[in-house]
Length: 258
Image (tube, rainbow, N blue to C red; front, side, top):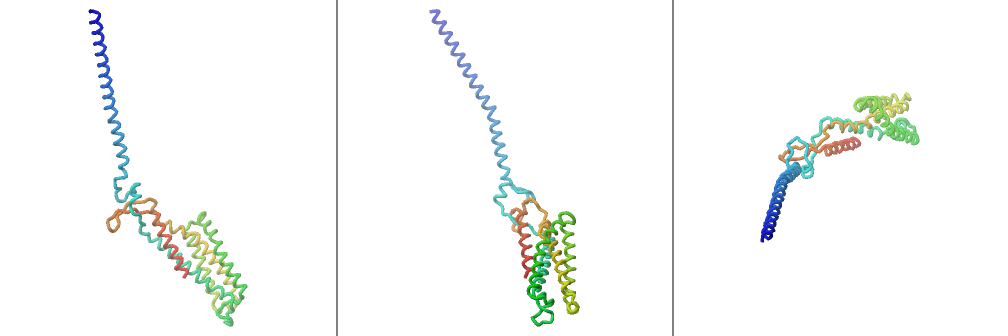
């Protein structure tokens, strides 16, 4: 009987220990859970905050975030006045080039006396074709030297100024040696060859540098949030503005070529 009571007491004690250990384990798991849970919530919260950054509108004047770059309309910016000035220079240069080149064939081929039509030098078809072809070749070669001089020595702006001066000197020689008195004295041929060499140099210096110079007048390199005339948020995109610049640039070339 005593042994039975002893076994019952031991069994009861064992059950109590098991319950106590189970309770402690449950309490430990609960504490560990609640200790870890705020960290998980914090991580989740931080994740939401990081993902919410793109949901906040960028202030006007700031650089757009990824969401705004996907959703907002992109527009070009108003062009600086310097862009229009460079375009006008190119228009005038092309007007001069094509205006002179169009008359060279008849001027060189036909004589001044008018027996074969309006002319000046009378070098016939072979001579006229040779000189005009050389002039075109020369105008396509000289931009190589014009770009080299600008990059290594003078810069684009000074190279264009010097080239314009050489260009005008060639035009002045052409005009002076094409008058009747000069043609009668035999100065026409020498004056014409000198003028096409000088105008070719001028053309090369201008053509090699005016295209990159016009883009350098626009200095923005990053996108920016702005409000349009309707008050809507738009993105000022430098890439679109540069496209507008070169559209106007080639428009001026074609207008000058008319």
